[in-house]
Every structure is written in structure tokens, then in C-alpha cells.
Image (cartoon, rainbow, N blue to C red; front, side, top):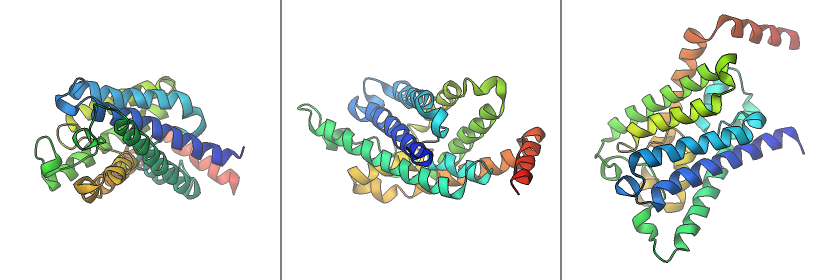
Length: 246
């Protein structure tokens, strides 16, 4: 199988895992006031990333998030062709997972899709705390910034890179703990678009924010990392490789 296609397939599967299990935990168990509550849902998203990271990390790097892929593109770790392939695969994986989750809920005799939802994100009336549009944008930008900066830091160090999947998963759990009552926590455009497209309604009309804000936060994190925090030896290696190719 073509190596490039294998990477895209891995991103599709990884994003499917994240959305089906993460959003599914929120939808099926009753959301914030349900069986799992904020901590349970947060850990579901975090553990989904841990599972995906160890399943496909060695193949594609387990971005499963257009914001992460954008950050890697800005830092020079991903080509424009792979960026496009990754993002398409991520959105398709999210839509497939949301469709499977919709089917699962509809197949239950005790669950109502209009009551459970699909783990969509939202602000104002769709926010548990009634967070405003401006507030939601800032929150998503900050949470994504922290998440992406952590990814850069943990994957750049040989001492921590072996445990990157676990650390990144715990960081995703960490940002979900504060983000769930505010916006439902996106930090991932693909994770938001799939459920919003399948569920529709007001969630779909608000999804633009959960695409734009994470991308802005990730871009800022990539620039801060590249120009302020990136180890000099990494920059030298990158330059040497580029020179050799020329």
C-alpha cells in the first residue's frame, strides 16, 4: 500500500476513535449532569487520544486534528500535500464517527438523539455556562494554544517522546476539564465539524467558531514554539537536512 495513503488512512482511523469514543461518552451518558460528568467525559477524550497515539502514532504522528497539522505545517514538519491529505482524512473520520454514533443512538430503544445530542460544541444557549461568542473564541484559542505547545514540547525531547501519547492524552483531559462547561471543548476543528454536520441545527450554525479559534490558537503556538522555544539543535538539524536536499 502507498505510504502516503497509509498515513491518511491512519489519520482517518485515529480521528474516528477520538470522535466516536470522546463525543460518544458525552452523548450516551447524559452530558455534564450524567453518569460520567465532566471528569469522566474529559478522560474519555484523553484516553481516546492515548489509544490512537499508540495505534497510529508510528505511522502518521497521530495528529487527528487539523489544528495540530496546521501547527506542524507552520513549523516545517509537514508538507503542504500531506497537510491537505491529513485534514481531508481527519474531517472524513470525524463525519464517519458522528454517523456511527448517530446510528448507535437511533438503534437504542432508550436513547433519544434530540436529548442526547452528539457531543457538539456551542456558545451562548448551547454553552452550559452561557458563555458568549467572544468568550468562546478566546477560550478555544487559549486551550488549543496550550494543547499544541505541549505537543511540540513533549515530542521534541527524547526523554519524553517515548511517553508522548500518554502525556498528550493527559493534556487533552486537562483542557477538557475547564473547557467542557464553557464550550464543550473543541481544540479540534474536525472533532467539531463531524457531529455538527450530522446533528445540524444551531450547533451547525455555530461550528465556524470551533474551526477558526483552534486554528488561530495552533498557529500562535507554532510561531511561539518555532521562534522562542524550539531547541537550537533542532533548528540546526532542520537546516542541515534542507541544505543536503538542495
